[in-house]
Amino acid sequence: AKAERKGGFCRFEGWMDRTLADRRALERDLRLAVERRELEVFFQPQFACDSLRVVGFEALIRWRHPERGFVSPGVFIPLAEECGLIVPIGRMVLEQSCTLAAGWQPRCRVAVNLSPVQFRDTGLLPLLSEILHRTGLPAALLELEVTEGVLIKDEDQALATLRSLKDLGVHIALDDFGTGYSSLSYLRRFPFDGLKIDKCFVQAQQQDSGTRTILEAVLTMSQRLNLRVVAEGVETQEQLAMLREQGCTELQGFLLGRPMPAHEVPDFLARVTVE
Ligand code: C2E
Ligand code: CA
Ligand code: CA
Ligand code: CA
Image 1: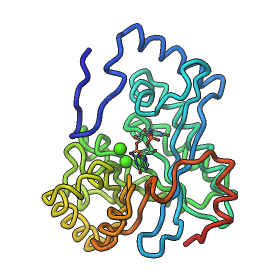
Image 2: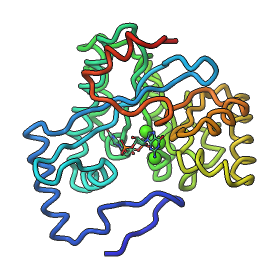
Image 3: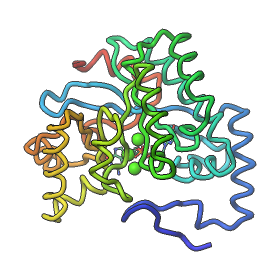
């Protein structure tokens, strides 16, 4: 199969390049990886745009394959979604993230990516309340990052799920804003606490004044709607300066901090100022 561009100008579904046999092999390995606990959660810091204090971390999964080496989540998450493995994988990420975050000093937010498959799983709500209860992490310190993929199929159902998640007390951010069909009206219609501007968008604004104009409009509207805006993929001082000037709330990117293994987080937190 040929690679297909899906949902925007810079998102490739990497596994589509592979032959069927390749995918079967990868799927078998992924099943084993789950059993052998080869999947590990890394954490990337997020910073307040004005003070550059740490406000939280995003949990990002990593797979250390014994022979293939490091396999990117961009490759295996779509595959896991297709074969259903995303449910046990997602559960593991939620459990590890909440357990670890409950022990961080000082406490700060942890953001966990939620696949549309997990979002539609009826087991999600009981799972979340059980994990929050067991780990003792205050619900307000957990943010779930969802993509517009959860919204398109059945808007009423999506709205009902988002409301019951909000009732639990967790926060919800709309991820990858600026790719796909993300519509500004989603921000008004659904109860999001924040949105994350995709790195393609952050990185395009420098060369492209049209992108910059859209970004300004999104930031202005978000302020009116009282939404936090996290810009991701911030790699340069120029991008940082521009985002600050435009009133962005939070920043995430290689310029300020790369994803790190969980065991490095406590030291990191001891060295920085936390909001
Ligand atoms: P995402 O949610 O948009 O995550 C942000 C991605 O941008 C991460 O890639 C992160 O490492 C990368 N990134 C952060 N700062 C920079 C930067 O300054 N420059 C560049 N070029 N990249 C930056 P990663 O870790 O490879 O994850 C890729 C995608 O895989 C994620 O995109 C997310 O969609 C998915 N993913 C990762 N972990 C999970 C998970 O636990 N569950 C689910 N459902 N999806 C996950
Ligand atoms: Ca994310
Ligand atoms: Ca994103
Ligand atoms: Ca993305």
